[in-house]
Amino acid sequence: LAFIGFFCGQGGLSIQAGTAVTGILQWGAFFTKGTFKLILPGLFCGIMIYVLVRRIKHMAVLPCCICGMCAVFYLVLLATGTTLEEARDAGWVSAADDPPPWYLTWTYLRFDKVVWSVLPHQTPTLIGMTFVVALSSSLDVAAIELELKQPLDYNHELSTVGLSNCVSGLTGGYTGSYIFSQSIFSLRAGIRSRLSGYVLAVTEAIIVVLPVNVLKFVPLFFFGSLLVMICVDLCVEWLWEVRLKMTGAEYSVAIATFALIMILGVEWGILAGIGVYVFFARVLGLDMGAANANTNTNTALVAETGGSPPQIRASNEKKTLSPRAITTTSCRENNIRMTELEI
Image (tube, rainbow, N blue to C red):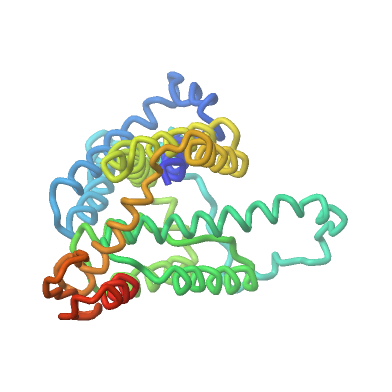
């Protein structure tokens, strides 16, 4: 998840700089004389939005920041007498052309133009992508689960992702997963209604069918700042704050996996990270959080049912568990074992 954040941040800087950067070794391109001034506003605004969203727990913070950035940009253009075309030529606004009518989109799906002979060579990549998407989707669910502090139905969530990808693929779209950062931001802002999702879907549909490219009127640092905000949020949470939720060995594996993904790429980095985990757990015998996992499961059950933490003692006391567990007054050993099993 931290790497996803890093990838978003790198993409945001690339959008603003107008330069294709695919790795940290190429980051020098961001700090040349011509590009640094383009990424500076997005970098500043992204960090500022992150701080405001974390400090002010209100659903209006992020929308106000988004509208404020666009308003300030056009006020600066007005104050300096700069036209939108001049700003576009200077690299502040995208120079994208107007899109073709949306109903002509599927005319680009020309299966007769596919070179099927190269498909066997792409099989390892396709298999790797399948595993990466499945794993990343599971991590997305885990991230939302941690934010909710209660368990989710992984099978249901992954089935939703799979069905969505089937529909997307059959209609010419891309593979994808949850935008879990949006779910987490909504939760932190106090949004609990499905209406936000419907509004987002309708807005995106309107943008698709519009004959005008809306991106031509939005400054590039607007997109860059949002991606930088996501980058900072994910990296801070999953590279720093997560240390409080893990054992030292688990945290070491997390940092090592992030570094290995940066060096080896996603597929090989994840495999190498699994190797590090196996080495720590099996060879060195370090604590990888199994006890904490059981504690968290019981805590999640309590949070869901509204009961008190179940405590099982091999004694002759009366035991009252959470509403979804059993209440037993027996002091026999067999009943105690059955109670533990039910929990």
